[in-house]
Image (cartoon, rainbow, N blue to C red):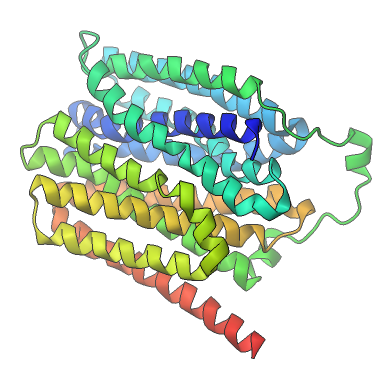
Length: 392
């Protein structure tokens, strides 16, 4: 555990600040500007679609220029995209807002690799704790994100334009922190060109049970979290809650996502990765149960907090599981495949959340989320049974 890890954890926190502000305001700005109500979460969807489209570009830039250069390019894109979002808000241009969030997806695709970079900054015996620590840096985003959105939404004459401007400053601060991190140097170009085995293809990796379940858990865990989180601001507005109430619920949600990062790695080392991920599935199911129990403020708060903790256990666990399943030369290919599946699932759930919550309601949305939760649990049970048989 070293200075580089702590700086990367701060960058993770600023990355999550960006994400939380986007989730908190993009649906509401979209609702103001969209031609039709069901299109309100298209800007949220644009962010994850941009991330999915950017994963191969980011993988190539990481392989060619290394971690630091690729991360800094992503942060420069974050500054540009936040400026475009502010311009879209000022000009009341819905489609420009959607395009700007697609561009911002390039930053998101880079930020999703911070956790893998963390494993490379620590000794092999501490990889789980390093991943968990950097994810715990998102706790900064839990506090800063909702409060930044709430404090800056009326900063400029156009609602929420000030929040987008504030995100430009967040990205610039992250660039300064990233510049101080020392990543492992890239091998000389000639050495990399003559490297032996290129490793397995993505199709071959997906036939590896451990990798396949890691992808399934990461994608569906993120998908369920995104489905419910993206719909929450809209559902709370329909229920008559003020934006400050929504910001409070999102704050507790993101605290649930990242506060466990201080001990999730220890739990995985002590209990094993599959049991911890299984608890994550149960917490997601508990979130749905609380959400179905009512629409009081405490129902939203408790449900979203449980959703956050469940996501942490699933996502930290799936990252650890993935690290066990591919070889060093397959790193860029494997990580790009995982992130592409995560972003594709998030794109689908971002669109579905807006369409379902505005046409079918909050309750039906929660009932529908039980399908991916059950599928994740079945995948984990299958892998656990397979491992038990192998040992026997």
